Length: 324
Picture 1 (tube, one colour):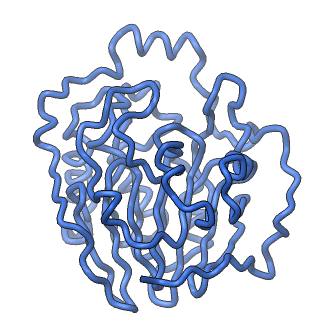
Picture 2: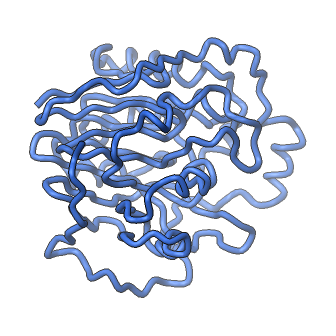
Picture 3: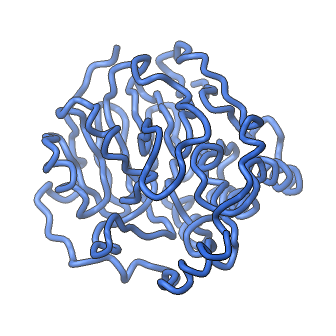
């Protein structure tokens, strides 16, 4: 079991006490769908695909294998939730263990790891404030001293729930636990939890760097020039945890989510060799067939001439390891 070390803000990072703008709408790169467009998609069944092939979604609940001190292991729990073991720490990305989240049918597949099988959690990273990425019932299961790394102006959501170690970051800012740095990076997305808080908190991804590996967790994002910016800022990323699902109907979803081909292109932009897929096979959020995200990701990966072994199209619960 690793030992928790209190976050240590790097010298270039700002102090903990922050003043944020009223909203971050100036960071949007696309207008958000208006209410009529949302109604149109719902009315025409654009987010109600046939789920008859849900039994084809691969699930491999084999627990967490051991990981060496110089290695990084990623285990896909489902949706955008990974157990990331890096630099001696266990980090959760956008943890969702709930059976159901507001607004959508219950999850298609069980979490890839039982909550009771989790080791000590050293930190949590949150990409943005949407229900499928920030799940209150799951967060409440964590000890209140767990370090939380969250986007700008989202810290009060956690402190109201009693969390005592919350670090808010703007894009390109960094914090540390031990030898691992946590860097918050841009995404083409947005945030909202209720009807009056659109873009009140920031959104983004995370780059985690140990002395031996560097991993990029994209969170939720559409396609755009911010991928190249991330690659320029953080050369040598070993693995990208990339969303490949929730992209149809395209006219509606393109402002929020990459499709599989764009996810592969994003890896080119970043300059990363390996991609692990996520954001599919768990919740029904869009209109594409359930298996299409991973199938199309494989096709796009092959069409780009990339080595098949570098596409980590994991089963839910499966672990892969980057060796140091």
